[in-house]
Image 1 (tube, rainbow, N blue to C red):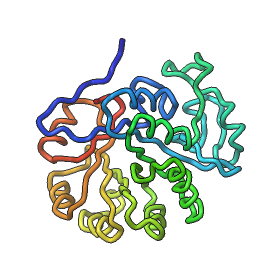
Image 2 (image 1 turned 30 degrees about the horizontal axis):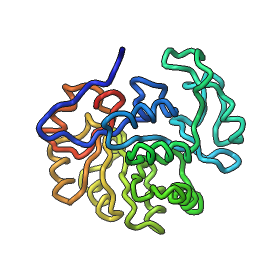
Image 3 (image 1 turned 135 degrees about the vertical axis):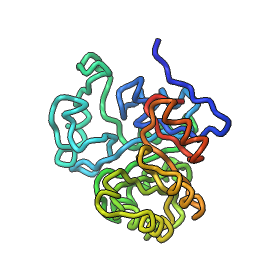
Length: 249
């Protein structure tokens, strides 16, 4: 039976299950979240969009084509429509009738039930009112203090800081940040200005940048690391605090 790959090292980072244990179960589903809950993960990551009628659902893409074949734009449909979509299983076929798109509330219930930190990626640019609404949904389950917000869209994080200056948050970047003219200095300025930690594509993190981020008192999360050969230097040499992964544990 397939299982996670165990990471063993002297200084092991906190492990975050990417979209749940998506190497074992369909990403961003109840099963993937529960699989993480039943293992040693520190946190469970998900992605959220807002439906046309104002519900927040766990889905990585803005449409359902990749995970459910039916091409439905999440932000243009009601929650009832989204919930009725049967997702494909790990096989890529619709071979199970129990896999659907979870609500943010359901994801938080699982995180709380298994005492895992919720790592919530804000996939679209939300208004201040919507971000407050998201926080209120999590706060209603008394789990906001155990939630980390992450986003590529810096606008979301800047808006979050307007009403939640102490909420844990991480700025997501990929190689595009540097290809588009970003520099280590500019990145550090952003992290310091908005009190953010760094969530970086693992293969663009350098020792120089890792040292600078740590010298600034910030933490580092790396994504998405799925093999031991890549994970070990990140843990031992760059001393990242978190590893986000589909299959490592």
